[in-house]
Image (cartoon, rainbow, N blue to C red; front, side, top):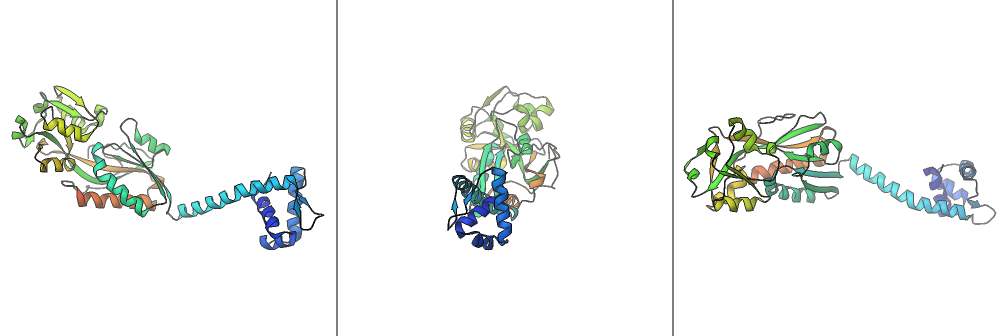
Length: 314
């Protein structure tokens, strides 16, 4: 078996031109170096050096092992440097997934800031609308999941980012626009426009309609938030959306927002991370960036009540 020390020995012999010079470079005695070389030759069953020439010349087998050394040793040193940076918290991987269609509005600026501050961290983003992101987080396929529906998992810690109110957006000329607060029964004759995800991942059902055993007259789905807004503004239906994601459309006079129930439907947005990674400096810094930008730029959000492991319906 060829060891790393064997590769380093052959490189030192090539660079030094003799066993004496190589032993000095490696800080070992010449006899120890010669013994190591003979041991390797015995293992391989062939000579690596022609010792009768001056300077020493490598045999064909020796040149092959040297080529291996030239390939392996630089990669090992690069890996050692990478591991040292990783241990210092300067490098790593941050593969995110989001379960929130509206979150692109604040997430992309946060990622831009993060990328500037942590250029050595490999960054990737997935929209978790067609797969279950939390099991992927546990497996190590993802490093952080943005979700409002935490599931209690021993391997995952949920860090609350902010609380937001889910409101119903209706057209300005809709009869519902006359109401500040709506009850579930008032949606029974409405077309509800949602994102194309499972019903149990939509807060309008789990937190408002289902507990009252109310079903909308029709459900229509579309992928894009701007398209949903245009459909609602043209009177084609109503939609439930986070209050902060509706601000610009309210300012433009396109829509009217109604509270869902007397107390409103409040949800908490979490960042889920693996317990083993929760103290990684770049992850902590990303969370700080996300909090800072959201509270600076989003309207209507609130600070989370308390940090909890998992609290559905908070």
